[in-house]
Amino acid sequence: MFTGIIEERGVVCELAPTRLVVGCRTVNRDSDVGASVAVNGCCLTVVERSEDRLAFDLSEETLRRTSFTRLVESDPVNLERPLTLSSRLGGHLVQGHVDGVGEVAALEPTSAGATLVVTPPGDLARYLVEKGSITVDGVSLTVAALRDGAFAVALIPHTLNVTTLGSTRVGDPVNLEVDMIAKYVEALLRKGET
Image (cartoon, rainbow, N blue to C red; front, side, top):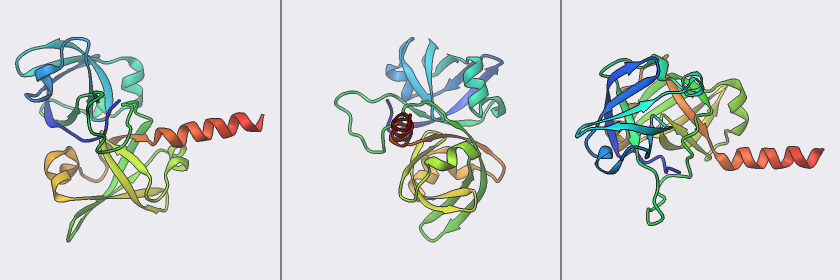
């Protein structure tokens, strides 16, 4: 479990078809082999660790459901270690299970930061509600508005500075995880219909 509060912006050092190596200093301090780390919102298992790098194997499922195939060396990535029982839950409950890849439709400057507009895959739109939770590339955010097949989130200067979202461009793919409670409610309602 994660919170969607990014701890560090790492950098892609190596990317092979099924291996991702990320340069980082904070997150790798206690991320031993076998530990979970959210990379752009996707829960991955550490398979190698050095002083300033973590390596992860990528499954076909991970490659199919995430934007990792579009990463290149030197790209920044959002990193977060999992919750502990003594952690504060500052964002929302995030599993690190990417539901789909959205596309950045706009990054609009505002007096208080920026508004990020994302077009989600059609099958995820039903889970989005105004003031509901959404995870974009691992960042816990609140849906500020729903717009014709897209959603908008407000980004404060801190979020723009410490995550990859401040450098996104129109057309960029972003990993999305919708609120898990919405998915459970839908599943329960569907079971009640049968």
